[in-house]
Length: 360
Image (cartoon, rainbow, N blue to C red; front, side, top):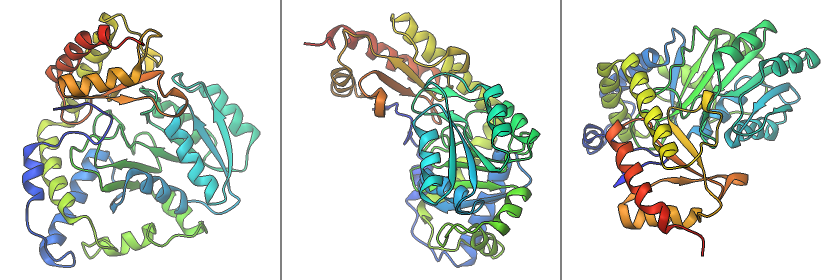
């Protein structure tokens, strides 16, 4: 089977084998060594000297963690939005009582940095900016380095959703002055869903000391205290920790630069391949993602029929569009355990299926 959705992603055999281990005491010495090992390796992959924590949750839990540990009800927050997951980040902040200023751009189009600076000038009381590095719903990557430079001119906190980018696309956390970065295990980390990983800067800790949003399970202060004992505050997803400890070794052995280059090659192969089939990309190609390619569905093609036929006839699983893009695009995930030959097989299946997926 070719599982080519933006997550969960395929797992290497080493990860699957590691998860077959028997359970152990999550308060014991052996698991403590795993926690210590995973944390040290994550700091390398996050490219940070700051704190990194592993939470047992989905990526959305990590986004909620970012919000409740740095903000208070009533705080003004600027949300930079050009896709569905940008909107989710803003929705979480709003649910907890933040006064969210939504700076919206057309889906699939890049962020206008001048508009960001203009919004920050117009809203001097903004405490934090919410930004998404890789927008999975539209297949585009936002320039977080450029966003950060603008945000830091105004001395604001920067909270980053890097769920579908970290570990695949270069995001130097410290160099780009990202205060809190969130990712999740089922994306570029090539293990099953169930863990969110969060980095925290010193400025984020200062914000934590002032933050008054309710938090219990998501309290990073608890995570910090328990990490000193090489533990997690609450019962962790032990099997996924086993797998992550192994896949982090695989990633570091390959080397971050090589991983980023591989995703660049695969992303280019996907984009050139779909264009060779007479299809067009949804996102502005200058900002096209190297982890997921969003493709416009031609009027003559039935999107649901296409995805069904790919699955049933070729064992190729791709994703449809989300929310207002449902039925209008399809998405090919190419992150984590992926090489050019994987994309070639997806393109071959598309070539055979497109003529038969016409609307009735």
